[in-house]
Image 1 (cartoon, rainbow, N blue to C red):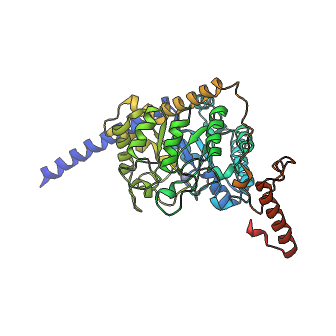
Image 2: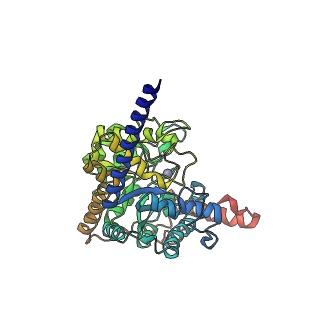
Image 3: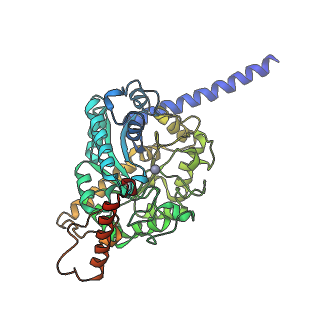
Amino acid sequence: MWWLRALWAVVALTHCSAMDRNKEMALKLMKETPLIDGHNDLPWQMRKQFNNQLSKVDLNTIQTTHTNIPKIKEGHLAAQFWSAYVPCDTQHKDAVRQTLEQIDIIHRMCDAYPETFMFATSSQDIMDAFIMNKTASLIGVEGGHSIDSSLGILRIMYQLGVRYLTLTHSCNTPWVDNWKVDTGSEPPVHNGLSQFGIQVVKEMNRLGMLIDLAHVSEKVMNQVLDLSKAPIIFSHSSAYSLCQHKRNVPDAVLKRVRDKAGIVMVNFYNDYVTCSQTANLSQVADHFDHIRKVAGHTIIGFGSDFDGVRRLPTGLEDVSKFPDLVAELLRRGWNDTEIRGALGENMLRVLKEVERVRDSLIKDPPDDVPIPYEQVENACRTSYGYVTLENSANSASRSRLVLALATLLSCFFWVPSHSC
Ligand SMILES: [Zn+2]
């Protein structure tokens, strides 16, 4: 029937033009407000695929990653927290070296592509890069194991430009429990944060480093929300109510993040979006809607996890697709203020507040109390600085003596280095 076909064509045309209008509006908003993404693992892909030999890569043409320069331009990615991630099995071994190498490659990426990237460490830098039409490139270290239980390493990493530390990855450190203790697959070691973990949080406030609670146990989320003087972030986590994965954020915590004026940057990984291997763009938008409903639009951001995950939603396959997600939020009735907040204004507010807290603590001295040696001792660690004449008779030093003897014996009988 000709009239039925004509009617269908009109309906389809109307639908398409509404979609085009939303996309147009999305692109307009993204030209006016910087899109800040909380987590991208391109640096890890550089290690995995090229052993960090950036000279062997062309970021203009690479097709084996979710991120390349044309996709960044198409996606209007204004600012990125690049992840300096190294796996948990580096803990107590070469985590610090490997993390420094990841920080180095982020610096080198910025140097190699100066027309595209601008190295950034502050809220002002993000706005400056946006005006210059470049992608502000910030560093987030993913996992407390990367500082090897050292406030000195934390401070040096800040000096190298690191602006967030995810307190754990998927392993406990000697001072904080990770999300897996909530699944029962790992035992809690510290019942949240240890005393040294509290020191780390306070030192991050003093430095002006964002505290990232993606990957920590729920107990730690609440402890840090109690403790931190500055707002906290979840750099790449979604809503637990929609997908009961312990990497996601429960409603009660979402409300506490709102009360502390923090931010939850929504992760696109299928397994955290739908708790299954498949997902689509609309289901990611459901997480945005849910967080807005529970805690308001002021705590929402984007935390894609591109290049760090194996499965991504249909319609959100790579960095170029951000505008499609923004268009979907517009289709769902998000207003301009809410969209601008999610794009970047919420994150800028958090970063500015963290910087303000840092400035208010400028007179506080650096914390120079090290973690107790017995909490980190192992065969690959020396105890320089810990052993003193005064305490040489106490039991702690006796245990160090035993450790030293064991190390000596292992030299005689050659214990292979992988025991570290
Ligand atoms: Zn992660």
